[in-house]
Image (tube, rainbow, N blue to C red; front, side):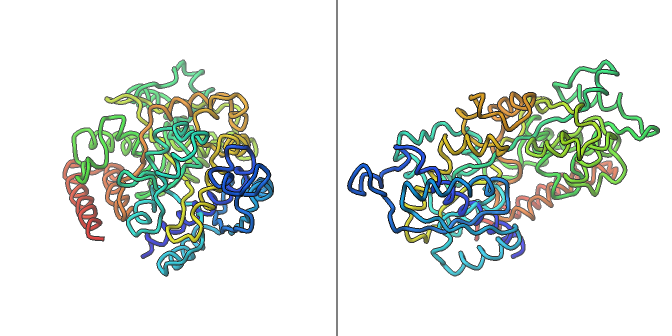
Length: 446
């Protein structure tokens, strides 16, 4: 129930955010008024006069960005958007209760597609959006990146619309590489060699850091997995014990064990970014969305020396995860789904995505990333890295199952055993694979 609650909370947030965004955007352009505009009677008619929707968002920068834009949406459509925002744990509890009870609210919610998307969809709590997304040619659904749409697709159905994306990248210290005469690593072999050369514990300088905690590390090791030509699953079959998968897990675990800072086994992203920002680590792999933790002079001692690079390529080339971390969805029991979609359509339109992206919320629309004004919210050096990663990335960063927490623990155990010095990782991987397969089979009965 604990894992279910977390997934529910994230999804609920996504739905609410979607409603708020649609409300603001619908009023922004003639086409965004949608099908309802012609039903209102005239050019000056407000298509949703007297209608109201409830939007639930997470306490997230996207929610902060969309709220000031809502008055225009409400003015143009006649719709009232009631916004509620919660911390994730609070939101999870609220949505779990409401969806389980079959509540018609919230109408739109913000959610984490890869954490709770499959659960929400399987339980019938999410309205498929395939038909809505194709109604208005001006919406230009094809403008969304393929990987972002992949993240919000469940069993071939569109369960939500992407609003926040992220990719795994390589962070590095420019000054250290320059002084050592090392080129920025483009392959995994080059990364390992560079890490070894710059690792010097006697001077409190460590070669590499990333997440070491069992569950959190799964998202970051996923890019190692894909770049070696492996994946967590192939259809309904667990595949974390293949030679390619074992190599990926071993590389990640060995880098942390032999070249990581003390205590890395217990690190999640705050600790990993924290020690990198202190200037004690040469390389870090993690999400691009967290870059401000090492480029903000108030947080980082070497803010002006942080470099960004595409994730190093393995046997299959560079294949980082490129996912939708937050999306917007519609409650399947919502009383006015057309109004709910109008909000989402607006909130995820090119015009509104441009506005939210300009203040640092990485969206999923390719056309916005291709505009100079669409990249002003990000460091100039990071923009081409994001665009390249999005074009070659994989649309998930964990096993796509209902019981996500259990699956992450099963996968993370392999890496932790590498870090602990286990000499038979194949045996560990075989046991973990059996555990993951059991989870997949159990989910089929839900």
